[in-house]
Length: 213
Image 1: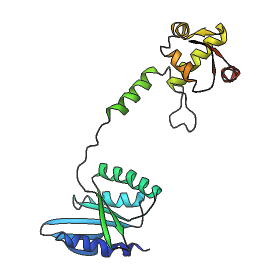
Image 2: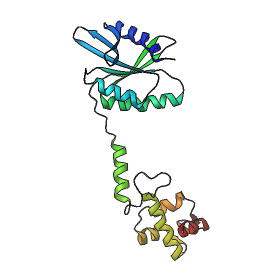
Image 3: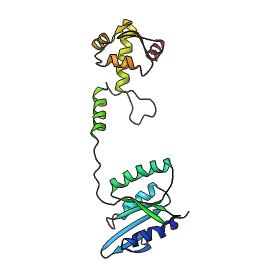
Image 4: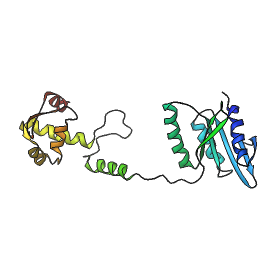
């Protein structure tokens, strides 16, 4: 497939909306005019940083700029589409998917100002983790395992049991300041704890090994 294969479906789509369309006008791949209204489309076989750079540059010419890519199939393509559409919206760019074989175009995003919707639940999660985490144990940009507030709390519980032996969850919570100590030991996310009796837990060998590390 060549980028020029995307042109006929895009041209037909714009003409169906009343635009007169011409290719390769100045730096733009596609330009459509409808009276004083202008639309610019940049064509690429797939999403790339270069495509976004070109789209941003065309915003100096007009407000209605689309990025057009060949429509793919499968989950990887749909995932890439969602992520790239999200970025395009934040930049004020539209997105078209071109089915070359069918000669059709699907618009996934329209150009124009966009204000992302804030997700209160996600904000609360970040604020909660920030406030509960002790110190700053992770380097920004770290790949792999991270020290979370949950792990810090589980470690406090493990350290207490290593010294005190088996204990009730309420006692662990009071001594460590970890309010959800019983829940942490019962859930046993890291495999460090063993239930001795109702509400009573002790540290197992895996937990001792984790503390020694």
